[in-house]
Length: 268
Image 1 (cartoon, rainbow, N blue to C red):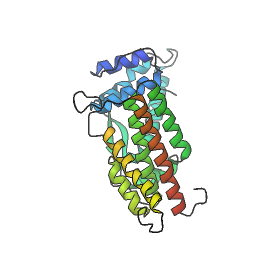
Image 2 (spheres, helix red, strand yellow):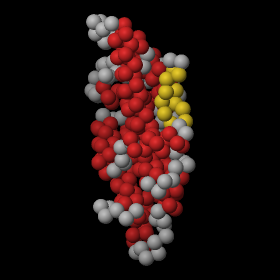
Image 3 (cartoon, one colour):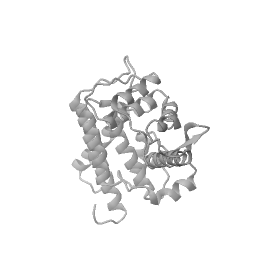
Image 4 (spheres, helix red, strand yellow):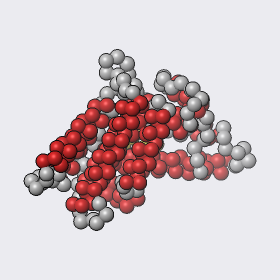
C-alpha cells in the first residue's frame, strides 16, 4: 500500500496550486521536493489544504490499476491513507498532536495524555542512530541548497531529544515548540548546572550549549516566517547551515549521554 507516485515537477505543481513558491529545477530528488512542499505548507498555514489534496481519492484513481473492482479500489484507498497517516503520526508523537481526516479535510488535533502514554511503546527510541539519520538528511538538504529544511531538521533534532529525555523521567514536556524552555526543563530535571565538583573549564564548555540552543531556535523559529522576505528573512551560507546541523547533532548526543548516566545506564 502506498500513496500515488508524484514526480518532482508534479510535486511542484501541487505547491503552485496552493500559492507556494516551489520551482522545479530537476536537480533534487522527489522526497526533497516533497519535504519542501510540506515545509512551505506549514510556513504559509496551508498545510491542511495541501494534505487534504494529497489524500483525496481522485488522486488514487489515476494510478491504481483499472482491473480493481470498485470495492477493491475503496479498500486499497482506505488502507493506503491509513498507512500514510500512521507513519506521519509516529513522527508527530512528540508534538502532542496527530493528523486525522475529518469531513474529507486533513487536520491536526491535540492528543490526550492517556493516548500519548499508551502509544509510547510503539514510538522508535530517540538514540544516536536516529540523530545521525536526521542529521544526514539535513546535510543532504544543505548539499541541495535547501537551507531552510536543514535548519528545521536541526531544530527537530534538539526538540525531540529534549522531549525524549524528559519522558524517560515520566515528565510530559510542557514547552513543545519552545526549545529554549525545553532545554531549561532538561537542565533542571537532570541537574546539569548543579555539579559543584566540575572543573571550571568543563563548566565553560557546558555554557556553550546555551548558545547552540538559542542560535538554532532563532534561526528556525516556528513562530516566524522562514520563507518570507525582508529584514526577517534569514540569509545563511552553506557552511553556516552545516555548522548549525552539526552543533545540534553534537548537543543531542551529549544530552542522551546525560540521560543515560543519570538513569544508571552503563553505555553513556
